[in-house]
Length: 153
Image (cartoon, rainbow, N blue to C red; front, side, top):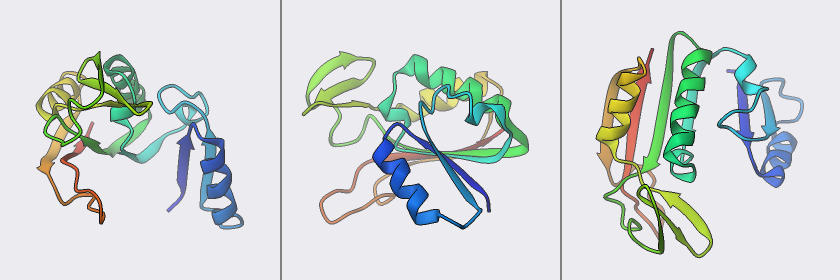
């Protein structure tokens, strides 16, 4: 599988490039995943968005989903995992609107799964599956309430 990754962290991208050097199967870019021209000039079979939607505003989310719809190949799929309104961290910190809070300098917007799936359907996506619950990303210290959504076009 050939993989393209994007992250705003130059440190993360540098580490990923080092780890995959010589594989010929992965390329990484430092940039804005919402509208980076490099990634949106290509076509993809799959898009995987893990813990990214809750790092952006709802208007950025809608822009991202519109951009993704244009780069998914026929029968392509998008997979999304994000924190939801039922997560234990919801409501903690300074409310900055739109189900978003800043806590310890960290912006986090909590996703309403029904609202997201409705938005996506209005954009022409077909929702294949939608789950919400704990156990998707458990660590020793945390078991957040997440949603997992799978959709196609």
